[in-house]
Each structure stands twice: as C-alpha cells, then as structure tokens.
Image (cartoon, rainbow, N blue to C red; front, side, top):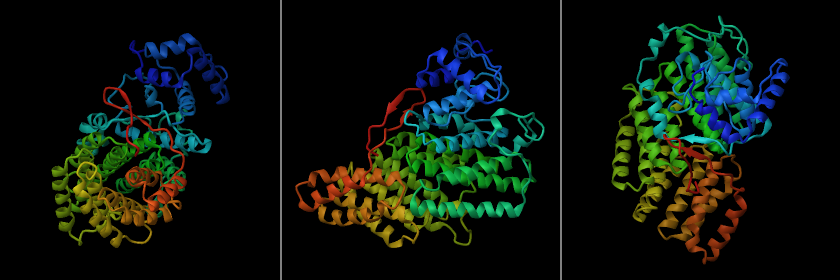
Length: 503
C-alpha cells in the first residue's frame, strides 16, 4: 500500500460516473464471469484503492481494466489505472505511465491491441477520452528516447512469458513460439499492402486488420529470437503500430491513435531504429496540428528530430521539417515557416538516390513535399492572404506528380487548392477544384478529408451570394456526415480543454 491516492484511478473513476458501491458490484459480477466466483469486493475496498493507493490482487486489475474500457468506450489498460505488473500502485507519472520499461513493450502492445479489438467488435468510440498534450509527452519520453536500448539487454527481465507464471492480463496473447525469416518476410509484405490500402481508401476499412496483425506480432515478440530476427520483428511492430495510429487518427479515434504512435516509438527504439522512432512521434505532431494544437506539435517535433539520431536520411529530415513548418504556419509564423520549408527543399534535393529510403519513407516523394508545402502556405494564408498564391502553385505541382493509388492525398491537394483560391478571392477556380474533391471523397473512409472539407466550407460563406457557390455549399452539406464530438486535450498540468477549431 502506498498510503497516497491513486490519482489515475481517481480520474477514470470520476469520468465513469459510478458510485463506489456500484463499482464493487460490477467487479464481483465480472470476476465471476471470468471464473473467479470467490471474489468479494465491497465499497470500503474500492475506497482504499482510490484514496490510499491500495493495489488489488489478481484478477481485479484486469477486471477493472475491462470495466473501464467498456464504460468509457476507449482502451483502458492496467497501467492507465495506476497499477503495474509487480503489484504496486502508481502515482501519476508524466503521461499514462510513460515511458514504460523496455521489457514491458511487447506486453503493453499486446494488451492494448487486444482491448482495442474488443472495442472494435462492440462498436464503441471513445468520445470522452483525453489526449495528452505534446509537452507532457516530450517531458515523459525525453531521457528515455536518448538512452541506448542495447543497455536493456543486461537489465533484469520481468514478465518473461517463457519463465513467468500465467498472467490473467495476457489472455489475448497466444503461446509464444519462434518464427523464422520467411514468416517475417511475409509480415513485412503485409505492411506494404496495408500501407497502400490506407493511402488509397483511408484508415477505416482495414484498421481492424492492422490492429489484429499487430496483436499477433506482440505474441511473437514474447519469444526471444536471435537478435537479427528480433530487430526485424520490432521493425514490423513499429510499422504496424504507426499504421494503426494513422488509421485511428484518420477515423477520429484520437486518444487511441496517440497511444499507437507512442507504442510505435517504443517498438522502433527496441529495434534500434531511431529514425523510425522519430517519424512515429512526428505522426503524433501532425495529429496535434490537425486538432488545432500547433504549440504541442512543435514540442513533439523537437523530440522527434533530436531523438532520430545522426543516421537519419536527408529525405526523412525533410519530411520532419515540413511538419514543423505546418505547425509554424498554424501559429501565423510566416518567416519561420518559409525558412523551415526552404531547409526541407534543400534536404530533399540533397538526398542521394543510391541510398534507398526505408520502406516507411517510400510514401514521401516529391508530390508529398509539394503537398505539404501547399498545406503549410494554405494554412498561413489564414493569417497572411498573400500566401494563397504560393499554396496554389504547390498544390498544382503536387497534383501533377501524384501517383495512382494515392486517392486520399489527391483529395487533400484539391481541398488545399480550392481553399487557397477562396482566400485569394477566386471563387470560380475554387468551385472547380472543390467539385473535383467531392467526386471521390465519398469513396474513402477518411474522416480527415471531411475535416478539411469543413474548413473549406467555412471559406465559402463570403461567396454565398454566387449561384455556383450556393450550389456547391448544398452539395458539401449533403456530402458531410454528422460531426462527432470533439476529443479533449489534457495539458501537462492535467487541465482539460476542448478544441476550438473545426478541424
């Protein structure tokens, strides 16, 4: 017993809205359903869990995780409740127990994906979940990301599935068994297939398949393979976790997406791939800009760039610069944005073609460089309308260079171009490009395309007296689904703030 309140459990208990007696009855009922009819929790015991940090014995932590997951409609792990695997109650750390110990990554990955699949089956969504602010994530992960993961090999190991007794939290993990290079080859090919599908149709249709595959890889990682195979498996885990996060972000599951990005960074670091870890954190930064938190995005980008290591290729560094520039544009920092985009262009052109990019960077090509520049200038144009012309030029170049199979990116380019035309007082051209976006936007499962469409719709208001724009506005209203509730962002000090932007 820690004699100190378990603040994490207290926060979640407040969100759930149960009484202590009600939670005690639910725990007993759920435990009985799991084969533990002897469990007899009462109100006073629940009070001790919350007020004095008392840690319940197994299987209660997993029972609580299941109950809170169903109640809140988002994945709640044992660590989220303030409990760890050695049976100690936890005080609040910087953000949800980050960073966890190296030997815990496979277990966290497997537990989180297993509970995500459970939520997916039951159709729950997580409207009341909270996002951690970028500064909170960076403070939690700064020292961890800059330490050498190889040192973990000499550290004592806990929760080893080959030596430890059965853990009730591991019910989603199949029995650990070795895999060979051919199986890993197949896993790496499956990542390419999922990545291509996501780029074409959005994250909604294949998200469950990616999460399921990641869950399986977590089971594989529970077996300690030879180092060269284990590194490749961690690479697969990192790639799948980034995809799971990106797909979750694409369909509006923001707290879930953020957790996957952090899992991806852990997995990449375990595999010794610092550039991949940095790219995973840059995805969390892009998420923050999209949600109207560019200051938090800049915090994350500092960590992503500093933690990527000297081996990061120029093209990867160029990609990181474009994300930073988008955040700067959101804050109206035009001079800083232009300087950062200039550095991105220099880095991109300096990249040697004789060094092939890693698989996860092959999606970032010249079209994407122009697409991100168009987005940055279009965003800056909200503060400085003169930037709209430059945004149009980059968007047109991105569209010219776009490859087949990148339908979602093409929609974004059209929306950036149409928005820039509206800002530049050119409604006729804007109408043309907006309709091109509408032609295919219904074929994707990407909520982010709808968010950008809403941004563009806002710009049509000043031209609503034009007959063509009136028609366009009606078509947009028909194309847009009903808007879901906005997520909540939790700052480093625990203050929850609603998002103000329609993005």
